[in-house]
Length: 193
Image 1 (cartoon, rainbow, N blue to C red):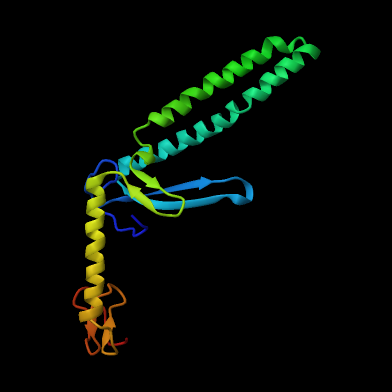
Image 2: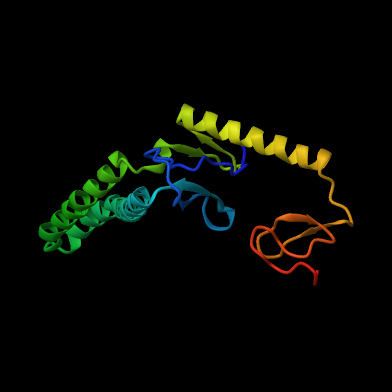
């Protein structure tokens, strides 16, 4: 599915239909330094799920930070092996520090992986900017909405050509003939246009 941004008016996670659907901004970055490439997308979620997704992102940041700390453990271990020859007192404290680093970071990584608000359970965002909705029913609704929008745009172009005799209400956007005095929907004075 491409970046059409035609979503049903319901939450991506809980499938709750609501008039008040929020947008969850999700981005993905790959590469290091100057070769960084990132893509982003907004997905519709309800208020409760938005809170859950934001909590998940915070937890994931902590987990990613702890992964960086875990990557320091081999260097600390080498420092322990080399340093113990020159500084015998380090043999007591460095193993404790290494085990604390490992044990304190593992739960965050594990919890962020099994979290029910992990966005990758619902959407696969590719690096070329396209995405795949994993829920088949939700994806089919999106395809139907997208097809309807294409058909309605084509219908407007074929049967409702915009010409010199057409004006739009600046307040609500309704379409009228040029000599219309007031908007029937909102009451805006159209004589000045």
